[in-house]
Image (tube, rainbow, N blue to C red; front, side):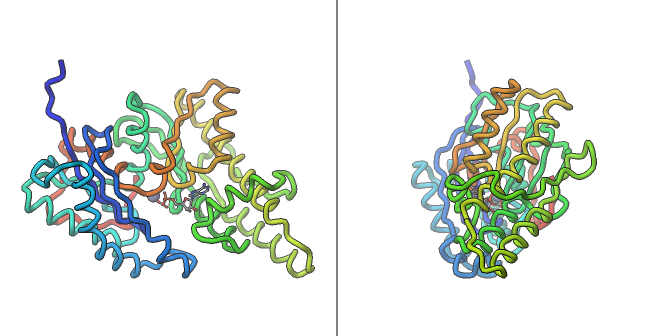
Length: 339
Ligand code: KG4
Ligand code: ZN
């Protein structure tokens, strides 16, 4: 019989353009998961405007927290800890969540747990897959990050490689903007690519030097932008679907080659993907094919746990709670914090 007390953590995520609060039980069970997306506010600017994001977090955080408590059927006094993303992210946006989390932890006299946003993305998989345990290889692909990591333990990472310039999501968003799609661009390219020919245009695959797990996506991004500009100059019609499909296939070729290489070298059978781009349908399809071909187990969270949310922060925080990794009220935002 398990007579351990259930641990209920209220988690706050405000690192970019989502104001999110969730309550998570024992790191794996969602009691509530509320996300207010600011996409509609930022889309007229074609990207996130940091100060506008901070102001919107301020307006929404209290409301979203109350909603999360109400959905979970809980009162503040029922909580065991408060978790908050303290980086990486936009400094002003992070500070809103941090200040609110500190006030709650102080008032309730319960621990305050700092969470690295990327640790959060990976941990979304602990909610989706109740039996998932380290070690495994993780491919983290979001708007700001592209990493391949060896997950040694809960919250313990050995970074094997990362992007040297643009993140995958960033490349998607920039290409989408040039094609005249909306913001964020990833989902638009995902659906447009389904209607296009993947081998219509030869875009470069950048693998960098032999054996490295690092990435570079600025080359392919520039090559797509150059292609679009030269077609415009020649007054030739651009087949957006073909551009989307060809661009996406080039990116995915590189991601899959490197992540499977890492799994083989480090002897892991399980590969997980995380972050906003992990919702990409072609990436999932190609990974599933690879799983069958080479006998890997590939896991990815449901869509709502791929893009920014606080449930993933609450999951990561639980493993820190068990290790008593707590912060005091001097906790600060670290916009470039490493994994
Ligand atoms: O993880 P996330 O919500 O925020 C960051 O931490 O960056 O990721 C957002 C990124 C954006 O660049 C967005 O275009 C991309 O994820 N994204 C996608 C898809 N859905 C979201 N990229 C490709 N295909 C998708 N279906
Ligand atoms: Zn994120």
